[in-house]
Image 1 (cartoon, rainbow, N blue to C red):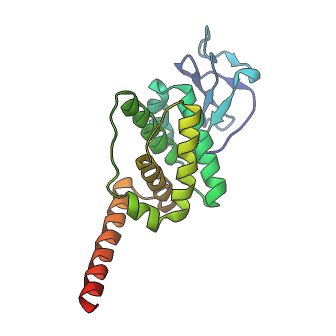
Image 2 (image 1 turned 180 degrees about the vertical axis):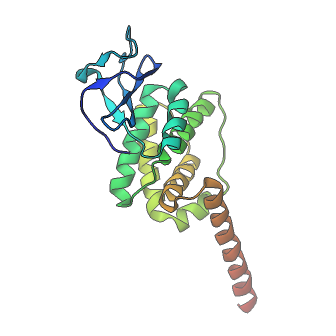
Image 3 (image 1 turned 60 degrees about the vertical axis):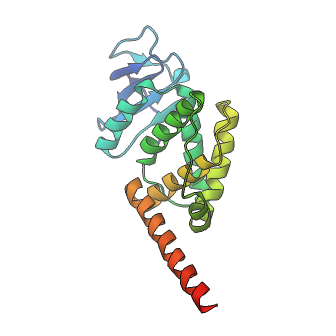
Length: 201
């Protein structure tokens, strides 16, 4: 995700806190800020001081999916997700596919909704994820602290594993199901190795 700053005209109003604009090349840019669209209409200028964050996804399909997703997601969740992705890029020192803004935002939002409903989803691959993707797991553990502190929730360690897989997914540029399948295959290989070692011993 790239961030730009120039004179912004409202192209679409997503909700009271989110609008889209077009740059000089007619690329759609998402602008966020509390009350940024309050009493505004399409074609009006967005005051610079109202813009807290701006997002530009290079892939049009991803950009449209992100616009659709963020309509009903609280601004604080979007801000926390953006902070986590920036933190992950620096901590992992790897390029992450822009699709992570869609997948991780959606995941964190639903994780919080489940928490508020008293639902805890266990991660059956937590041990394997911790072993196979140690750097991603470490960053995800810090991400969980950010979520719990800034969104005032208490999500369990199971979420660390889920978030770590989102990082792995963005590194590999693969579908999340594929990353999970890779982890399961590694788990099965280790089980076979352990079985043969036990027979030898």
